[in-house]
Image 1 (tube, rainbow, N blue to C red):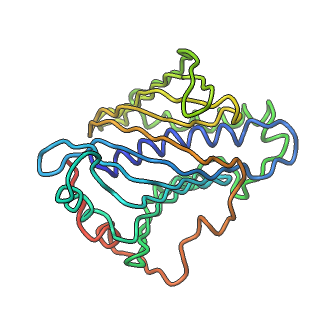
Image 2: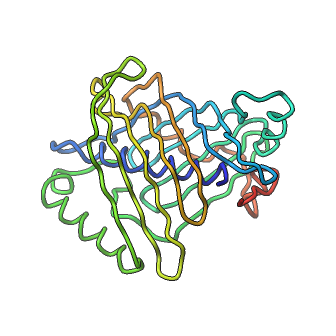
Length: 266
């Protein structure tokens, strides 16, 4: 499993959570929901055919349809300086930023060191509001039905789909009382390999159900595991400019123009 794949898996779980929280209110209008947090992300990756755990300090923020992840510095927990130097060649020295937009199903990544960016665009728009604001009709029972109809359109390209959530208990974690939910999500597009993510989400009861830990295993075209731990959480929306490509950055022809090297798919 590549580091990029693990990051995408963690982003998927976080994206699902942040969208659900944004749609949870019932009054109108509802201003853009959001949060900021710091944390660590550890993912299983393969380097030169050897599976290793790669970790990074991160910052995470969300506002409306946008989710931003800053990967500050890659390293291999518990290893020597030589191994850490090997890992860090896969990340620009100035760190890496990823922004996911739910409205157009795109992901943009940029490097502060190289001042370049690249956008992965699915070419499909989602029914979410581009302004980050929902009316009562969109957010109430009628809106839920409309959203369900839009989601139904996505099944036409799938040969298999399954999703489940189960409450498995309550415990203490990082100073919070948390509700632990086991999740499972699997989908397969016609003619493609199945991709599945399963794991546990730890929702802090004192932070309106915000996740303070996400762990999971990915199986399919790539296999591996990841764990995301969050701290210093503020449930306020950051400035919209935080999700914009910085001025003066140029578009790279492919992702290697941002990473500086080709990321292996092993």
